[in-house]
Image (cartoon, rainbow, N blue to C red; front, side, top):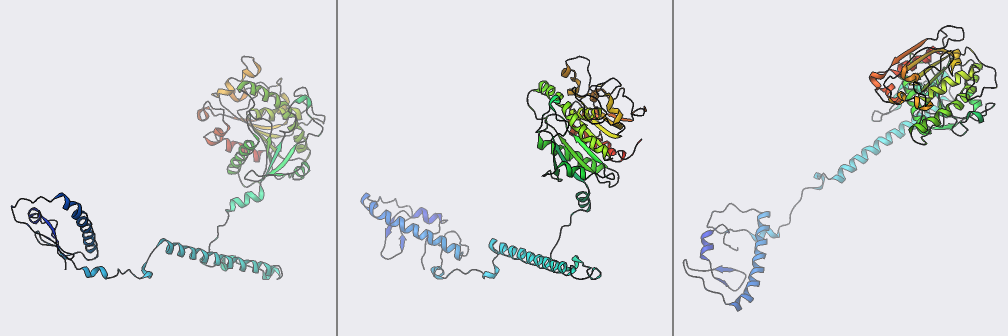
Length: 460
């Protein structure tokens, strides 16, 4: 048993001022109280200090280890600390391994649970496949299957919403692009324009189609809505914006009338600065109106119920197409086919960028009302873009229909006044010329445009 002076024993530390080394492995401190310290010769420091320092460090480490393994009983001041060195030879013991909870154990349990669930799902699928193969052989009376009874309780399925299944099975989406052909009216091919027609899914994925397939899907019981976007819309953005409008119609339509939604994509990418870019696109709307009139002629021949929706310059294309369909001239060009009157097409215009007098009896698109059944007009008297509409023609006082609202319209084919439903959306849209604001805010554009689905199948 070794004995060391306790480090809290201040009296012993004050009395010990001489160090001597005895033989063996023990150190004894001796001195007299009040006796002056005896100087240690320099030559003895060079020999004894390193050995005593190393040995003291070793004993200090042993003391700490002993305190950790077997803490000694509380000692009083002035008493030396004592510990049993035999405890150093006893090995440390750990708890049994089955009591451990490590991250590897938790991960292993999770993996095992996942594998068990996957195995149960595979067995359920095998049972369903086996039952389907039996139904193809057995008579119809014996082929009643209840898949829910074959799925084990531990597995799960996520069924698709019934509304999503209904929309996917009924509504169809089309893309008609004229971005690859000329947009100059004097050079437009009006005999057989090379329209690029594609099918779309709800996510905007494009599948090439043809004009023959498009015409073959005409159905008098399914209304067909043609949407024409405004200026500065790239091809992907035109699809995205068109599908947003389609969703608005689906969520606001009355009943579950299936429809075909067509996105008319024309060359409207941003090319230069504001007013110069607007003048270029205004000239292109004449050719686009002629192309759309050529397509509408096929709709009328097949008695296909059709509605038209246009925003900004898209409204200019819509009214121009109806004017050309009735035999009117656009950009000094006419269709070579017989004029069509009384097509009874329903039209929805949002902030249309056309002059306020173009639909009057002597206006540029005066014959458009001959083919309208009714008109829904949403305008904004605070629109900062349409307020400066006169810059297109450089004639002051020229105002846009999407800014002033309804004024005077030419009569329909039978001489009756055109039914117009209009609304000033300036309190909610503000100064912005944004199509999204008409749908997202309290202007109720989605609800107003959805009425075209039912009214296009009725003649007022």
